Image (tube, rainbow, N blue to C red; front, side, top):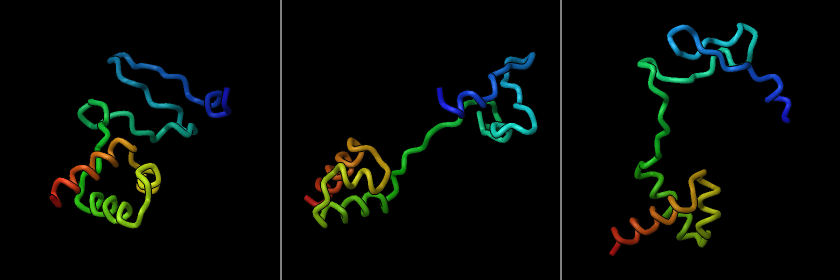
Length: 91
């Protein structure tokens, strides 16, 4: 078991079924658990044109998809998908 798991604040729900705040000295005190409307926060995919340009540029330099994905912190599958869309747009 890791040190963080031992120091982790136990999950406690209040009377409304929401997560109760950790104690004031806890490292988990200011953690964002949900948005203001109570729904869980969503992950957002980076889909900007600059990401596609970066992928295309690295591929043109000769980097393999795994290295591109690692450099840009995206998945291999997403890298291949972007490369396919760039090649289709060029054709």
